[in-house]
Image (cartoon, rainbow, N blue to C red; front, side, top):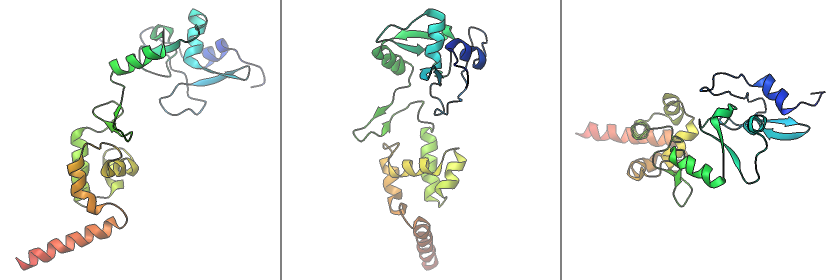
Length: 195
């Protein structure tokens, strides 16, 4: 931009102000990850859009405080949805609203959380489909996730609490899974032929 922009000009040009009860979303022009806060530049200094919205509405943010979201929408710039708090307040808010993630000693996510997109029934179905020879890519398509997500479930990198299910398919994991499945199917047919 040739002319230096102000916080006010950026917010005015980029954030659609709706009713007080609705989120006023900042556009993700900066290429941040999906679901993350939006940043923009003012006089070559980066600022988060929701912090700019707070400053424009209520004034400077005291040292040591964060601008938090009542709505849990990181892109929201509606001042009515924002409040000040410490890092501790932010953590308490996260756990109170069920956004926290419990991990085991290896950093793997445990238990129910909104970050875990698949239900217990979904995970059980994934193991069942894999046992029946369905590829990880096909399984991922059925659940609208990538084959990497499926692989992580099957290997225990995520959802590690499904140890029994994982043990039942461990012989199928790794290189040559299709060959292992084919060999296992041939073995079943051989047994049936001798019955």
